[in-house]
Amino acid sequence: MADENGEELPTIIEAQLNYSMTDERGEPLAGGEASGMVNAESLSVFPKLGETLLLSLREITGLNAADYRLEIVLSSGEKLAFFNLGRRFDDFVRELVKARNEVLLKDMLMQEKVLKQNVKATYSFFEGEQASRSGPCEVRVYETGLLVLPETSDPFRLPFSYVSGVQDQDYRLTLATEQGRKLVLSMMGREFDPLKKALGDAMNALSLKAQATFKELVPLADPAMVRKASRYVRDGRAAMKKDLDAVSPKIWPDMEKKLQAAGVFDEYSHLKTVGQADRMCIGVKKGLPADPTVEYVWYLTPVYGEGGKPGNALIMEAVSVTPGETPEGEEEPEAAETEAPAEPVPEVEDADAQKSIGKATYVFRIVSRKDYPGMSKADLDRAAEEAVRTLNDCMIAINFRREPIFLSDEKLREPANLQYLYSVQRLPELRYLRERFVGRVAHAGKEKWKKDLSALLAFNVGTADDSVRWTKA
Image 1 (tube, rainbow, N blue to C red):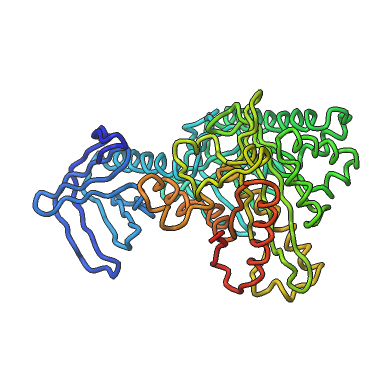
Image 2 (cartoon, rainbow, N blue to C red):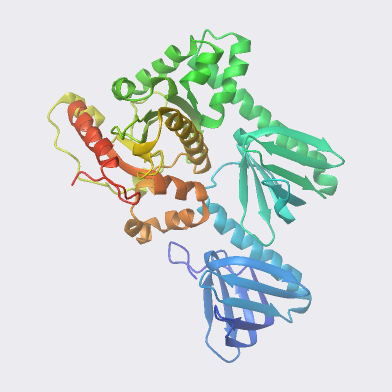
C-alpha cells in the first residue's frame, strides 16, 4: 500500500505462516501457506496458491494472540487466523499491534508532544465495581493526558483535566476521574518511578498552566481565588458563570473582557439576552496541537424554556487567535488546507459584515426534540448543565477541532476527509457531537446573523425528528 504521496511504504515485518479466513457466519473462505507482511498502513497476505489479501490496518477491529495463534477480527465481520509462525510469532504480533495503534492514534486526533513512552504495564479500567477491560499494554504520557495502548484492543486516552486524584500504593498507580471511573496501572518494573515522575510533572505543568491562564484572565485575583477557580478552566474547559460566581463575583466581568479582546463580544451580548445567563460558560485554550501559538477562545450559551420555547439549544461561539493578530474566527489552525467552504461566502454590505466573514456559531441540541416541550424548568436546568459538561469533555477529547463536527456523512466519505471518517468511527465523543449538532450560522453582519440564529432555534423545536439538521436553504 502506498502513502498519501503515492510512494510505496517500507515493510516493517514479514513472516512465513499458515492462515485461514472465514466469513461472518464462520464459513471458510480461504487458507493455506502464505507470507504475511505489515507496513505502516496495511496488512498483506500473499498465499502460495490463491488471491492476495490487502487489508487496511483500520479494518482490524479486534486482535487476540494466544497459544502461538493470532486471530484477527475485521470490520466486515470476517475473521483471519495466523499460525505456524515459529519464532517470528511474538515479533510479528508486536509489530502488527504497534503499527495498528499508530494508525488509530491519528484517527483519535492525537497530535500532542509525547513526554514518556514505551512503558510496558498491565492495566485495569473500571466504570463501576468491576473492571470493564484489562490486560497488558503500553503507557504513554502526553502533555495533557495519559494514553493506554492495549495489546489486543483500541487505545484510549485519559485527559488529565478529568483526573480527580492519583494514588501510589504497592507499585500500582490508580487514577480516579470526575466521572467515577478508575484506571489502575501495575507490573511496570523499573519503569514505575520514571512513569510516576513523568505523570506528576505533566499534571503539575497542566495545573500551573491553568493557574497562569486564569491569572491572565483575572489579573487582580488573589492566590486563593486563582487556585479555586483555575480547576474550572483546566485544559481549555469553558467555566460556568454560576460556578465562578461561587468563588467570587469579580471573576466573570474579567472573563467577559477576554471575549471583547477576541472579537466575539457582540454575539455574546446578544446571546446573553436570549439564553440562561447564569449558565453561560467561557473558556480559553492556550496552544492547540496543530499550532502551539494559537489561543482558542470560546463560550457556551444554553437557550431553553418551558412549553417548547424556541431553543433546546447549546450555542457555541469560538475564535482562534494568534498573538498579535486579528482574530481569525471560524477556521481551525489546520483547516486552511483541508476545509472547503460549507456554504457560499455571502455578499457584504457593511464593514461589520466584512470583519465577521469566516466565523460561525455552532448549535447543539440539549435533549430529544420529542421530550423538550413537556420538560419542566428544573429538568431543563439539569439537562443543560449535563450537556455543558459533556460538550466540554467532548471538545477536549477532539482537541477542539470543529470541521469533523459539521461535515455531512457524504462529505466524510470524500478522499480529502477520510481521516475524519475514521475519527468518527473511533471517537464516541465525536459521534456525540455530530449526533447533537443542529447547524451553524455564518457571520454575515449582525442583523443577518441574529435572523438566521432565530430561524435555527425555531426550527429546532418545530420538528420531532432528532436526525434533521438546519440549513439556510
